[in-house]
Image 1 (tube, rainbow, N blue to C red):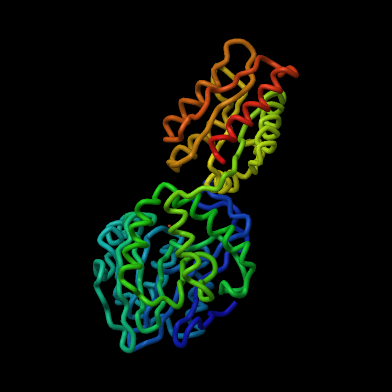
Image 2: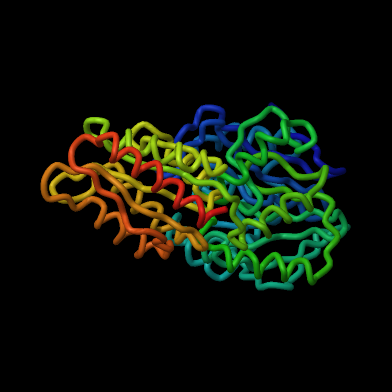
Length: 395
Ligand code: FEO
């Protein structure tokens, strides 16, 4: 695939990763692949905005070369130093060793700790501007969206915002624009990205979007570093981020569990019936068999969680324990939860789950329900009522 002119003299020169199924190590499942977006601006100063992940370095350089000799690159903007956007830098710099890099102070520090190169790096702050000739670029620091070094770059003449990871999605497609692809798929990937990566950073994101909105910048195009480019309606993804950053939820429930012999699973299903009977949309996930990234997306959108485990060694089963550790790191706010599970003799899982719910900052809204061995008809009726009672706090 060749580079694509997204506006006169501005080219997408990134890479499409059709095969990747795990990102950030194994913390994020990318079932639809991803892209690493880099943009080339032809002006008096030839400028590259971000680069790509190392394995795609060769095709990236060829994509640039089809448009301009890489030796002619004058400026490289480093919006974010994470390797998926910078691993191609050392190769690019071999062609243009005197190119000037621009980024935040944290990007400069971090870039050095990744590559140990003394590149010509100019530190920029919010409001700093550089001239490319006919166009300017203006920088806006965006710390913790999602690393300390992150920044946005804005081109006023073209009304394009280059926000790196913000507003992106892990979605590989032959098309580059929002108006060329299925809207449902793009928003599904955008919310999944937000939930799994940006969820704990909602207050920072909310303030940054407010700051950008107060600047009254006309924005025709948002060109993020992953997935499709927003040109049909860039306000749509900004509005979605505003809503997500406020931790707004839907009156939905998610039941997650891990079970040894099926008793905890039977409890889960009966609780789901209770919730459903109360009109609450409910999803159920057997955690060892579920895609964690998808489950987190569902939990991000839902108000309430029922969390269950069989007791093993007086504690939670290990797959659920690992999942809850990940969830705790996402610091869910404005959510309610309750615990349940089957036990053999001493019990312990319900208590442990409740402890994690508290540590995660989720509101524990009703006492947990433990059932010895296999639930009886009376126990299952109690599970149904447990679900119905839980529904009251999320409707
Ligand atoms: Fe796509 Fe934070 O890197």
